[in-house]
Length: 135
Image (cartoon, rainbow, N blue to C red; front, side, top):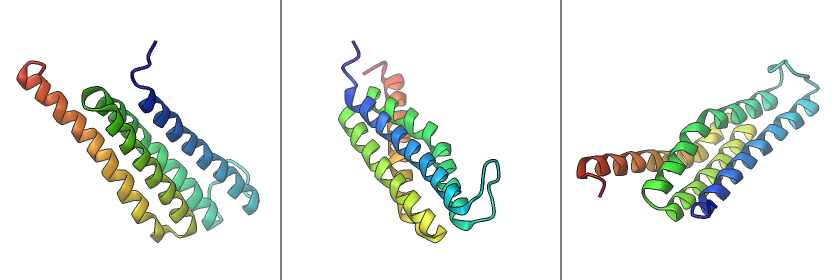
């Protein structure tokens, strides 16, 4: 049984639930604006809600790969902690962006730093392992 990476798995599910929540927010914004799919324009709050949702989808592959590789090659608890930071950043990003596009910067910076640490941390550890013969 894969019990070794429970925290990483939990953070993965939480991140996907945040993405699911954002999708529900798009549906709610569509309802409020009276704009049915597939239309994507015409009401600024709907457009920003869709953009926050899509931007999260754009970041999910980098985040999830970095999260798992960092957990495998460095430390699972640190990876999970950085994953929680990423989730908080994405929630702040989405809330800020929906309110006003200029309010998305703080959340974006938080999640991008967390993603960078996960990706470059994993890369560094893998490179070190290759250079030192698996140490």
